[in-house]
Amino acid sequence: MKVNLVNPDIIRSLLQQLSLAPSELNQVMGTTRAPYSLMGLDNNQFLSEKIIYDLLTIWKTKFQGPKLYQEVVTLVRNFYVPNILNQLPKDITILAALHWHNSKVNAISTNTHVELAKSTNHTFTWKRQKIDPQHSSFGLGEQLIAIYMTEVVAALAGHYVAPLAVTLTTSEAELIATHLKNSPTQLFVCNRQFSMTIAEALLYEKHRYSVTHTPRLSAIPMELKAGRFDQQIKHLVKPYIQFGIPPQRFIADLCGISTRQLQRELQKENKQFRAICLDVLIEAVQSELLNSERTISAIAFDYGYSSPSHFCRSFRKVTGYSPGEYRLLYNTQNK
Image (cartoon, rainbow, N blue to C red; front, side):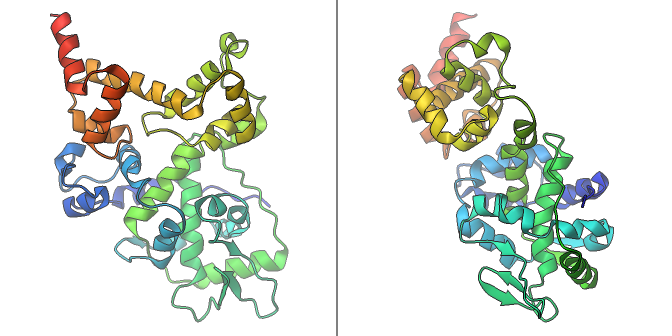
């Protein structure tokens, strides 16, 4: 059974509504050293896809595992998507948790899962607690949409084609469709955690489909395939380093191998994954320092550092200079 993608205009409209006030942004950043103006925004500017990416580098260290997903599903109710259910194709409902149960939900939290109960009274299991979709104050519709929208936005971004073939029995499909059809059309979702969930899908699921449908290391140029394995990993890491160091499992997926296999191959060359990523990160930051006029604080946050001071310490440890000294030395030599 195929599930069609929602109209991209709906998602664009959704992203346009994901706005943060200055106080909210500072709260998410968790530091007074990251003023709102640092992001280059004004008070009325909407969160674009790029800004969501930028914020992800800060959020990803603060909202992880059960905490992230729990905050999504309990709904802070400060974000309002009008009539979203009416705008979605009917067969969106097929995406119910079965696809997620075996993939993203487990990646976010091994303790948080959604499964379709086979019971005769047609209740659903949510975190081991039965919820009657007809009488619960937190209906299944909200749960499924919060899950589904991440999938849609990731596919919309064009980075990968979501595996949209989900097999359900007729009764299961009808049950889900009936419930969503009867759900309230006014849906509340926490804008910050919801935005992060979208961004995670955009960032870390870019090549999931292509990895499973193309030969191993297809993202590696021919001239690198016969060379050192660490250079192949370095090549794969580069496009994602602007968001911070990518997960090892993500790069392993791009190679078409397991995380353990990746580690073994690097050990043969006496290399470590994190050390390779740090080298790529420093190279990218050096280029940013020399070829842009952006502040050191802005560069630090963009590349996933928790604070400018952390960035300065890490940079000095590798280069022997602080970022400011490195930029000044280069500018002086090239006058």
